[in-house]
Length: 194
Image (cartoon, rainbow, N blue to C red; front, side):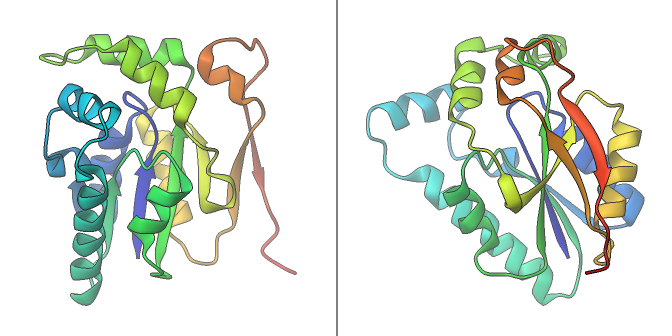
């Protein structure tokens, strides 16, 4: 099985991913380690009609998934995968791939990025990510990224059980942009019986 943690910069993908892989005894791959260019250069290249390195990176990550699955190992992978096309490339028709989307309000994401040592905070990039992020819909289990990592690890580990059917429903996408005062999440366990 493969769990891919998705979401914008600062959502907690790497923190939760490492802890989840350790808790499950699975292989961990941080998608950021497979970036061909620094983020600012990638964004600039994409705006100028770049060379498709984003697609190449996604295909490379899919190949990593295939190699791990061929060895009959399990994997936790992190990648922004901001749209359905990205997620489809990563999954590539493999049935044992699950997505978990970590969502948090923009203010929280910015605060987390500011706390990173040696990391340049690009709020314009984050804003673009949030505007461009397509709802994961039925492709992902959506989790409240403001929760403590140990809680998210427990929820994620529970989702690795193929019989589990748990979802977090996100009530208002404008919450990412900080324009909603509503409670953004509710946890609901769906029945596994038909």
